[in-house]
Image (cartoon, rainbow, N blue to C red; front, side, top):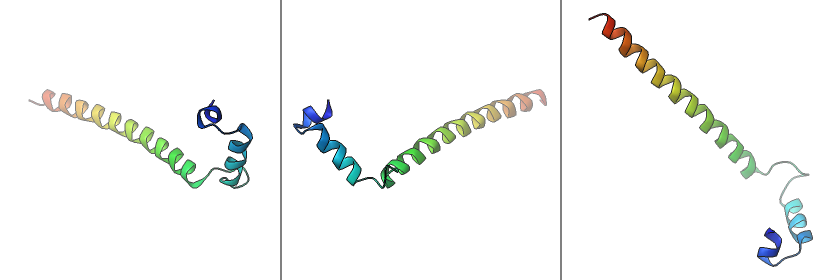
Length: 65
């Protein structure tokens, strides 16, 4: 689909991909994107934990009054 949109043969895309990857390994950009996704997931988990701790702290503070 992409090849037809670009007006190039599929074989050219495969050849270009092979040229710009190291023996089928991820390119530096791909590894950075994967790291970014992992960090975003971790950030979301930490934000959820923080919010739960804030609510727990507020609850326990209200019990002491």
